[in-house]
Image (cartoon, rainbow, N blue to C red; front, side, top):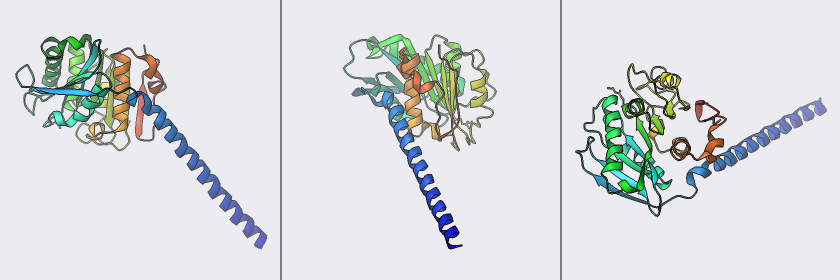
Length: 278
Ligand code: 9J3
């Protein structure tokens, strides 16, 4: 009996060790993966300069950020906040994109309550201002433009893509637009959503929008995420937004391994990418 109990204690001891070893390996592997995944979004970052533009050009004013020390033209993105939000909501992502070599116009909307469609028009007005009138118009390539936004600004991004198919990319974050249909959208679209979003439930916004779209597309859903998880400063939004813009605005295929196969990450309850990418 003693032997048996010893042996059972030892095998329990061994299995605890086995579990600990497996956990250690899993943690080590995920750390390695995190570091690997992190690289494209943090390598070769630029110093950023910024300035504000007043309201009156079709949107409610903006902060323009751009990378310093680039001689050729760069791609650009316009960013819209959601209902009752202002440009502070996504200022962190504007900074990240500028550090990664994009010119960014991060807008306030004309009113805090504008519809998704109006936000789409304001994103397009912002890109027109950036490329046609702004102090940095000459450094922006007018053929390399993207739109991003949160909630009604995410719905607006898809509206902008519908109206202006020559956009190169869109990144709707927790997109919201009641009853919208985006089946005509061919602009490459990365939707990032929250599984438990009570304001723009994914079942009636993000997921059908993803399904409807006809172009290259990706859908990342934060496990247990809220309406605000995709816009709170975080690694998933940062890495995949940068990768999507590098891929589809700049044509940089070096990020493809981040996108295809679709990322596996325990922070995500869904991860879909229309692989292979064109
Ligand atoms: O932009 C958004 O956060 C959409 C939120 C919303 O509930 O709008 C209701 C009028």
